Image 1: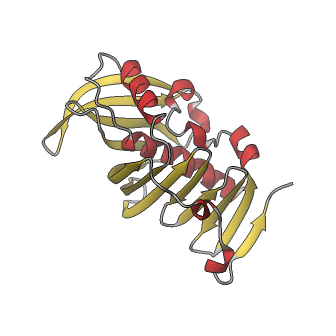
Image 2: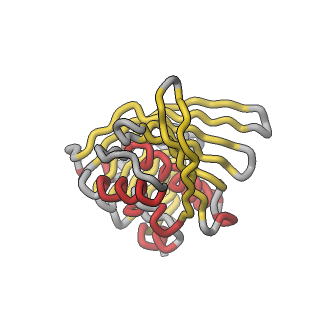
Amino acid sequence: MKHLRIMKSLLFLLSAVALVVLSSSALIAQDAESILSRLSEEAKEYGSIEATYTSYMVDKVSDFEAKQNGEIFIDDNQYYLDLGDYTIVCDGATIWTYETAVNDCYVDDAEAMAEDGMDPSKLFTIWEDDFKNELKGAVEIEGRKVTHVNLYPNEGDDKPFHTIQLFIDESTMEMVRAVVKGREGTDVTYDVTSFTPRAKVPLEKFQFDASKFPGVSIIDNRL
């Protein structure tokens, strides 16, 4: 189904955003595994998270570029993802995927989606089981010295991308940028503009309120 393919793509791409917002005060590690391990440990201490970001999409095939701002709220297995054209809301049991262009909202079972590889609890630790990693070395982004780490999905044919490039500040261990390299010539760059750990996120943020979307079509895919 179209919306399930969309959800897979969006949630896997959002994993890259999650990687960008991680930070640590540790010194730079000697290998990618050590860096990512420290990031995982730091992420477990964050609690509720609120972040904003800017994404830049470049479609090399159709020579198309787009820029948009996004917003993320995560609290345990609940999350809210504002991706511009799509909004995905989950209260831990139900997932609502709202498509702005057509005013449709798809409703799915969160447990079923997790079995299909869409588990928000893994957003900050997906590399632990699902990826191979490679330390590429030091580069500069806008005059800032960063360490470049690549992630390659173990089951690459099932993912809409073949590589996630991570860029980590060497002095602060902050994630500066993530670039998702798509399989069909579309690359997306994510830069975080704000990040608040231990944020006070209201519970209603994780509920889809149909009354705020007049005329919305609700398509319930739950069994």
